[in-house]
Length: 220
Image 1 (cartoon, rainbow, N blue to C red):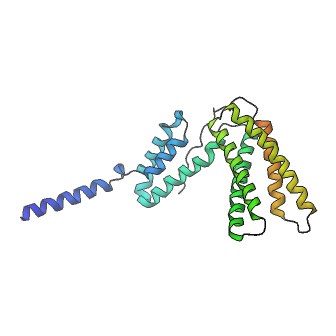
Image 2: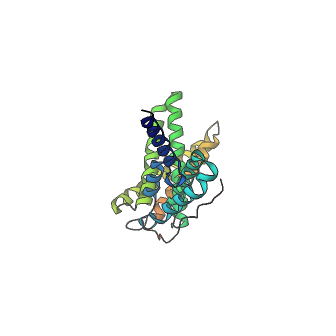
């Protein structure tokens, strides 16, 4: 009985020790999966391998499991922010930034309208949803090289966005109460609409993809 208890205890500690070895530890599975999804096929072995090596050999021994996981997630987040702009022309990079800005602004405005329920909030919520959907569609088109038919629809919607932005700016300048955020969003919509019409001029929104992802930095 004593031998059996000793054997169980030894196996328990042996299993725990193996689990805690840095070379057997892995970063969060969802972060690894997201990283592989974000990367182009040519980078799906080298970059995850380099991150995993630094995670196991440098981060785990120095920082522990929790801080090492946080570092890994931060690296994935940095790649996620950079990847949509990688290898693109400056104009398409600006268009992507404006689309992200409009998507965030319309999401915020839509939520505020639903919470505050000001008079006429229904049409404003619909407009916010339409602008957010157009921005999201443009983002997906630029990242995943959308079909030419979608490109035509986006260019038409870009023209409409520019017209709406001009209308918002003019109305705001004529209004009794000037709203700075309306002017900022309106100018952004004008520029976004113009860039949508100008930059989406190829059959599949092609870009040169010869760029490389930035090297991961080891700052904690």
